[in-house]
Image (cartoon, rainbow, N blue to C red; front, side):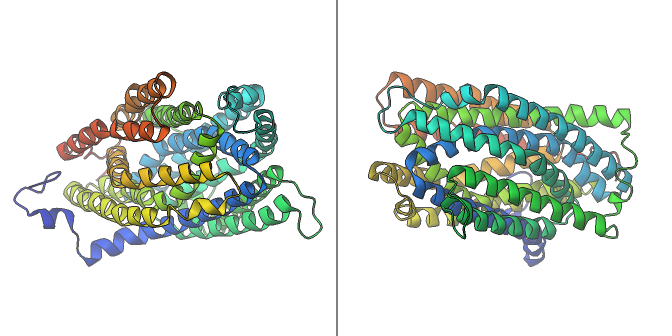
Length: 471
């Protein structure tokens, strides 16, 4: 049996690395796991705090965060296109090339952020209303809409800081600096946690602000994180040579702009379409009422804490394999990728057991109805069942992306969501009486074709290419 090459080699040699391999991979992956875990843990605490205020407030926050999720992934996708080149330029020690990709990220992120703020200010109310079912009697829809609007208006103030953090931290990670983003994120989430406690509930003489306080705390924490990342990067030019004079010249070679755009636009489009497909999936589930919205909010907030393991492994694939491709070490890149995919699946399988163990207990921390808690537990267990599958899809996606196969990643990722997942959810939620949990299961089963396609594409090795032209 062989996977992705490995001619004449045993399965163990193909999928299992030595100690040096795991030290190298974990040195990149663990800081990201810690950062993501702490971020999601504090998000969980934030969510519990808002959940203690009431179901309508929690649902309003969940709806806005689902909409902002589309913006976040558009930023991630847009920066990722240039990030492919950053990682490969770093592999060849081309600091000028890294400066150009940094400038490209800046211009693109400014454009995406301006469009997002304009859209949410113009159509925010209408977008929120899509998630509110008029026939639902499980909660106060007008109160939910009002809380959502108030939360959104404050959250928009934090988008410029979020944008800058992503530009800097993505570049740092692509250049193998993962500890500083982790430390900055830890500081930010602690600031967020403290101010959430103070502002949501009105402690230490501050007014009780509820969901608005949660938004204010998030905005403050994002500007704190931005200051840490930006100041550290510019104060350490020895570790970040590309940062010297980064704002003196903004020009980018025309050919490089064209090349990054051709490679990167499918990633931006993919993230926009994939994240919007996830928002539409939630909207399909929301047809079944605020109980489902609240349960999805609880379960996703908790499972995101566990998902950080395979998500960090996917990002590590993009960094480590991308650097090997940039250095022209193709066979080593293939071998490393095999082992990283196997490691991601193994780790996610262990994490899935933790999801099952904790699913009955986490939802009970929320001040909400028993029906909401029970449904959240079911959603968590479903997510746990499909976690190894999601880990494999995530790792194969980043494998294809590391070699610049962005059009394929677009077809691999978004097309499946719009052609398979959304039709399943839309039809079953509106035209059948099937329980929402079974609808979710069938949507995830619909990803089996995506798994097969990912396996074939990675095994063929079509992603093994150096896109910066140096070796």
